Amino acid sequence: MCGIVGYVGPRAALDVVVEGLRRLEYRGYDSAGVAVVSQGRQFLTKKAGKIANLDKALAESSLPRTGLGLGHTRWATHGAPNDVNAHPHLSANGRVALVHNGIVENYARLREELAREGITCVSETDTEVVAQLLGLQVEAGVPLDQAMRAVCVRLQGAFTLVATDSENPDVVVAARRNSPLVVGVGDGENFVASDVAAFIEYTREAIELGQDQVVQITRDGVEVTTFDGLPADVRGYHVDWDLSAAEKGGYDWFMRKEIFEQPKAVADTLLGRHDADGKLTLDELRISDAELRTIDKIVIIACGTACYAGLVAKYAIEHWTRIPCEVELASEFRYRDPIVGPTTLVVAISQSGETADTLMALRHAREQRARVLAICNTNGSTIPRESDAVIYTHAGPEVGVASTKGFLTQLVACYLLGLYLAQVRGTKFDDEIRATMRELESMPAAISDVLSDIDTVMQLAADFVDAPSVLFLGRHVGYPVALEGALKLKELAYIHAEGFAAGELKHGPIALIEDQLPVFVVIPPQGRDMLHDKVVSNLQEVRARGARTIVLAEVDDDEVTPYADVMIRLPKVSTLLQPLVAIIPLQIFACELASRKGHDVDQPRNLAKSVTVE
Ligand code: AGP
Image 1: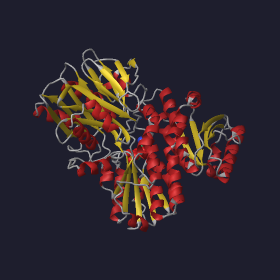
Image 2 (image 1 turned 60 degrees about the vertical axis):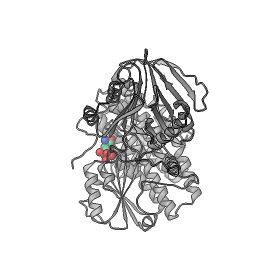
Image 3 (image 1 turned 60 degrees about the horizontal axis):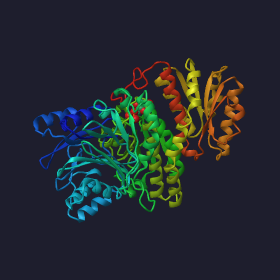
Image 4 (image 1 turned 180 degrees about the vertical axis):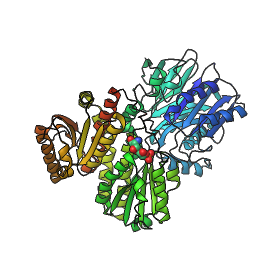
């Protein structure tokens, strides 16, 4: 998620904005920039890299120290992280400076429209298109706030926008849809920002903007309207967080914050993935449909949690495309002399895009002339750069070492890949693909439902805080969920935890079952009776041997109730999509249990966010 700061007041906007961006660094970013208005001109400095690079550039440029400006730290979504794509973006006439957080889905069509009017964008970003549209408006004499409203109604997607006009040095105008924006109300000065961390050293009085609202701030005023220009009722509040809490949005851990960001992360990853007719469009996929039709094998390579996302993907991709799909730990892949070639599609899944094991496996696959597609959350990182194609997840920066929203958005990207391959190869009809996409687009709400009912799993964490061992069982796509649930507990609570394929129990692991041993069991949706009944039998087997069973099952699944010591209810979703909701309680369980043990949940011992060594 990008960091945004806007300021109008008696202080030097440059200082306020750069300091505010520093307070937002925790959000993760790959470039930064500022623009201030002075004597009818925009003065702009922006650089790829960290704020230290911006500081160096600012030391060499003499930006005026006036009282109006804005700034941005960018987490690249459209366009590589470089100086040109960094924000702020200027309109062609130099009037408007704009910063943006989010994704404008229809930017390509708007860009074509601008080109027809003779306006050529200089960057690859969706943001610049908005700056150009605002520039045209103010050049026609439209006040900036009115221009913002006129442009916002033409945008699709998620956006927080903040703009200034060189010929109107007293106002900052901002707007939001599906992306946060907060106003800091000072005394003779006002602020807009992505979150309160940017301005709480100056004021703790804030106003949270609502959906589809525009705000104009001056030194002494804050005026909020709807996109239609009608006055909007907003409520102020006092920020009583300290800076550390502010960075975590009031949560105690980044991981907990990121667990609760998952509905938005999934929604953002689904944005802009199909055209008006429902045809899937994966715009970063640089492998032609004709080539994709020649693929006769898929091999997914990844590590840790990313590998478990690949295991889920295997079930979906094989079911939808009928292409054999192997999943391989990246660290094993190149040592097993894999059978890959020009008709193999190797899919490298990586949140960071820098994991050495995955990168080396990818290079080995390319040496064997396989086509490589990356699924990655970090724009411009090494793994997508060395791949033939990429599907970016849009989870935003994941600060907690234990992956949560990274995992969920990897699942979504894998589902999109499977559906796209099915569309290209005709193994699913268009109406079937549209139906699955509609269900995927309903998943943020389903995930929110799970997040709104966590008392049971929070109590479980308290009950099991001293448990020496916990087992997790699942079958079909529930098996990777069991593996991921166990990994979360291992890496956060440092206790023995193991995930099993439920059908494997009788081949050995059932010997582990002891009285009151906690065993989580993921029950498949009731739609697949054979699958469902088998796992219910496994549940009975462990319960009969004294296990304390924690059962994750659909809301109306009463068949399992007699065998559940604790029930965790899940929304009804299709079998293949159930991991998107089933993993949530397991993430919360691990996070809460580790927190109760007094562990550093965000930085667990011995672990790094990106393992850049083999
Ligand atoms: C997940 O909680 C772990 N932090 C770890 O397993 C991680 O998923 C793995 O190291 C892969 O990282 P990547 O997705 O950045 O490649």
